[in-house]
Amino acid sequence: MVLVQQGQLDYLVLECLAERTIALAQKRKRQDPTQGFDPLLERRIEALLPHLLANNVRLITNMGAANPLAAAHKIIEIANRLDLSVSVAAVTGDDVFDQLSGNETSLETSKPLAESGTLLSANAYLGTDAILPALATEANIIITGRVADPSLFVAPLAHAFGWSLADANQMGQATVIGHLLECAGQLTGGYFADPGRKDVPDLAHLGHPFADVSPDGTAVFGKVAGTGGVLSLATAKEQLLYEVMDPSCYITPDVIADFTQVRLEQTGPDQVRVTGGRGTLRPDTLKVSVGYDAGHIGEGEISYAGSNALSRAKLAGSIIQERLGHQFTDLRIDYIGSTSVHRTSFGTYPDPYEIRLRVAGKAITVKQAALVGEEVEALYTNGPAGGGGARKYIHEVVGIVSTLLPRTQVQPMISVLNSERLKG
Amino acid sequence: MKLYDIAHSRAGDKGNTLTLSLIPYDPDNYPRLLKAVTAEAVKKHLHALVEGDVLRYELPNLPALQFVCQQALTGGVTTSLTMDTHGKSLSYALLEMWIED
Image (cartoon, rainbow over all chains, first blue to last red; front, side, top):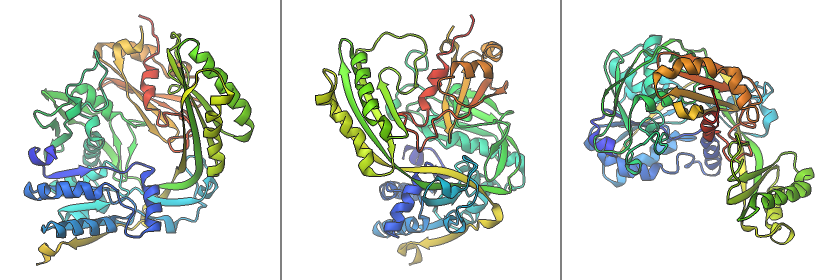
């Protein structure tokens, strides 16, 4: 909101779609064809819409999730309610579920997709070429489903500057810009602070980043003055390498980008200039993210504190292992406070004052998953002394695998909807 | 010294693959990292976590190193039983590594 009001923006991008989110959205769409978009869409659009129009900012977002068209209808409904003049373009064509047989090879397992489990969704990562036709309309809001995250940023740059999608170096630099912006506050210190070593001021009011891009692709990143956070070479380096495998070969639908020649310069307080992104021509295939039913996970937790806490927790863990080990092919026992998140401890640390035992097991059915929590709870009367605060959880698991489809098999489309006020 | 004393890191995930950046606070320490923090040394340090290979990419311009650790997330974000399914906290596992002063 601060960015829209004070950022002097031409375009605002909201990237809201994690890998698994779309498979869950697909399930909602199956139950109700008017659903399947981001559950926060209504609240966000209601708050933003008047300000987007007042500041002449176009919004590009993947909040359409599994159902961009229904999301566009919802936005028009909001615009009509607020009596605003709004045009929305929905980008579709990423949903390729009906085109898959299940025999396609999974990139992760090297086996047919269907062997992973019952398939729930399949969405191709669309690129800039799918978004450009929407930008060519008068749409105030462009709403997509699955699109490669950087492409949400590359598209408005290519549109505004008339860059050719065949100019791989330009696409490479644009992808660097998109990659730096796609996690929003992660560029401005929102995942950086380490007190006394990497201090970040006023994280409670973190400013999100913007990029001021020149027609040659040079980008100057900043944040609105007075907001919290920090934008420095260090935060930019962390974000540039975030989730990157080979930095000379970052594959998107737009380009195979090369980050190795990127130059970062601090040009002012909270201001970093970025040049040097390059690339080679885009791949002939598109990556498809495929969701499948992966059963359920059952979890149970219980805490031990004070003298000998770790030993009591370990005794509890061994009881659970003996009782459940033979019933679960995949059972995990963690000691929270000691070795849970790093799965080991490096060097020797003194025993912590308190420890939380956590047990997790993979199950097909809810009933089997429930056993985990039930056994942990039973430690109250069949386990070591002083266990407290037992909790149990069951969640449904959607797994993700991926495959490649030839670009020619994916047909992006746009649909434009206008509000009553605009039509009138 | 511990890597934590001279460098910072962020973890990322792609399926069952863990990525770890290693960025010296002072660019002058880059050659020291280049020499001491080899792919083999990281594989050895993270042997309890990483089942597959560790690859190292050098980015002298930044300067920074990028480590790609294969089969490191117990099956991947979506189906792993671990608490930190993304392995996001593992940046600090790398920083626990000791190198010669």
